[in-house]
Length: 185
Image 1 (spheres, rainbow, N blue to C red):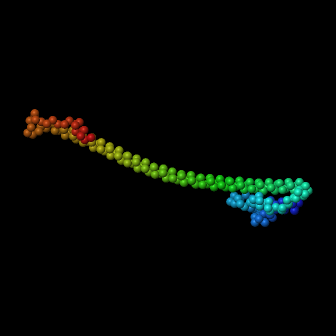
Image 2 (cartoon, helix red, strand yellow):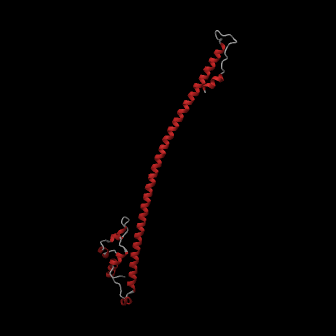
Image 3 (spheres, rainbow, N blue to C red):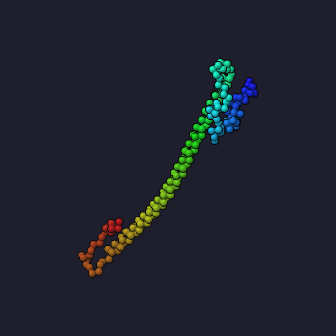
């Protein structure tokens, strides 16, 4: 179990608590903040804020193994904090990339929808024009059929009537119905 003084020393050296306040940060800044990955101290800041207890070569032999273990834990915590910070930054960057890609895809979808609507309007106009042309063609076919019928009736009527002033031998032969029909087409 750590004493109160050791706990305070540990808290100040990890960047949370007293040492963090010296760097202008509070304990909340050491937690997860997706909007500001710069809020966590760097490893250099944590190491600089921890009390400098670099043992001299003579004092290294007198060093307590618990102190060395505590120092390793502190370094590991600082390293993990930096790793988490980098991971959050990567995730944030990936999120921004995905948002940009989604915006691009939404823009492309809007453009494609506009093109599809324009093509649908054009298709409707072409179909309407085509229907109008078909109706006009059907009307022209009826008029042609009526005209042919009128020509045949006139030809039959003309065959039955002799020409005045002309003899039977001098009569000019009339064109057949096929001859006139070919002129109309």
